[in-house]
Image (cartoon, rainbow, N blue to C red):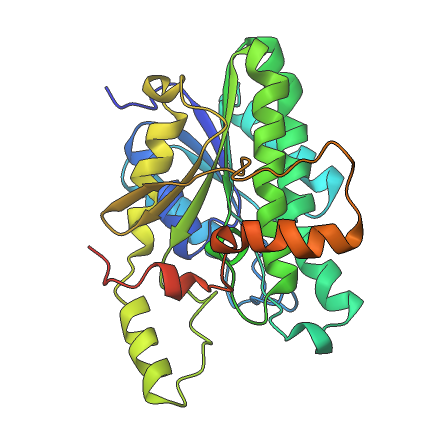
Length: 304
């Protein structure tokens, strides 16, 4: 008996990389899988040769599992509904949604146009909303369900040239927490996971300097298949008590991230003036200000 026997799971962006690893892990655990992949470039345009989703479905079926392919876009409200319908029509139910689909349009903020920003928000943040909302009535009716949303340290910590991506990924954290709060009474849980993996989403990183080359060599050690087992655990009945959390998976390391809470406070009976704030509050808080770290400044050790 696998941990996901009898369950049906939708995995978006499952044709390659992290999504493929999650889909295969779900199938190995006994789940029937809707393998969604639009089959486009990392910028979200054009079409890849062949059908990545169909290839993953064939791999699952060859191993004795159940799977169907879906080629809708998560950014399309009606398409998201069709993904969930594919699970219900083919497998009789929907038990989990893993929001993994993504795109990149990296550019420094002072050069970023509205199309660059909107294109990433539409896939990551709106896409996560669309598929999650499509599954919500089924989860509510059956009194159970699990959401796993992919966030990123680009939003949790920071990175250069990714204002669009960071905004979407940190927005997903807020979306996940809100879903967890709103749907807890129906037995539904929601968590966010920051994955580290060497995939085509990051293989365009420049290698012009020795520092960049060293960084890329480190990233190549990150196995995209390591994320799947953790997602299986979150979606299994044994993970039903885990909700509203932010995790990270980096090869054999699993992280639990903190969430924003007050660190310091300042008050005065007379009320604050701008001058008093600059003279008293900013110096009082200064020791606890966060520096402008990037993800690599925080996670400085090699993957385990």
